[in-house]
Image (tube, one colour):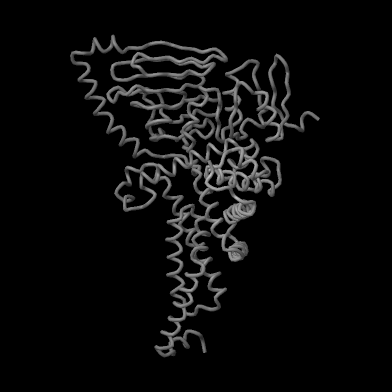
Length: 329
Length: 200
């Protein structure tokens, strides 16, 4: 219920104010600042409206598309976790090892078909929602719970265990958790993790124990709403802030994207239905932000033609082609 | 005779008088324009607290002027000085950014009562950001796209216009619509009502 309904003149003032926020944000020119001051002086309500619109503007999360180089943190984390894990392993090995491995071992491979979504409960009680056309394997040892996402996307709700970290391997990323919820998606141009509860450590690590040089390993601790992605072209980690609800939204039938390459967006959509959608190379790296419902892909494709200079060509059994509009005429 | 010689030759009370007139002019400027200056700086710095800090620094610099000059010139000088300080800070912030990635390392340096580190405040800010991102999703897809590119990804409006294939004027209109829409939604006005009040 609304506090009080805004009048038309209040709305007009808000509109003027937000134009000023944008103009001042884009330019440092003194002349512009002078004009703005004149506007402020013209009516007592103007500056107040400006301040309000500015608060809205500032309240949006900053896009922290910064690449991360944090070797000091990486080594600190390692130092901190290693003794705990080591001590824990020793304790576990003494006496209860046999019982434990029987009770909690889990080795399996699960694959979903196009359009099929599945929920799996692992031996430790962790829950895993596997997106369509995805492949995952689990391998639990005494000290670690390893899960490998080979293809597609999965949402993890990890059962809490400090002594037995839950480690998800996905392409070049390793996500380590002790009890949190997060989503992992493998796309053609990047692999991304979104945290919806708790904290995880994401590393662009090589295989554990592969002996590969660790010098170019990046590591970051990610919290609720952080999306950590590893881009194949840039070959490094980046962090952005997103709405944490985005993480598992696909499970309820809405795919949400924030500034992601069309190639990755289409790849995710293609898991829901055959025949596939193909994007012309020129648009594969075009960024898309928005919501897509797999049940209404046709509508979304129509909307795409409005956003980008593309045309969508239905090729029947060969799928749908998204290509430059200039191409067709 | 040069200005410097003149100044040295000036009697003490004349210097005092000049200082007095600068102080009077600056305090008048403060009374009449401080809120405007802080508003202006907040646009640059995205933080009201930091804007106030920068404003204060600018006043201090103004107080060191020998001759305040005409009020309109002094005002322009105030805004220019403050803008330069703000730009310096932004540059500095970019360098510091990498340090933010490892907060534990800088724990002792940053817990000096800085408002940005207050967890309760952070939570409120985060919740509000989440709500706003939710409101954005109610907007027409093209409007969402433009706003996301410009505000969330920091793409300049001119470039957004090129990428999306609309005029710069249109980009500004989309962004304005999104901002006013979110402002009204934050007030608790329903989707249907807001759509009645504002249109693209």
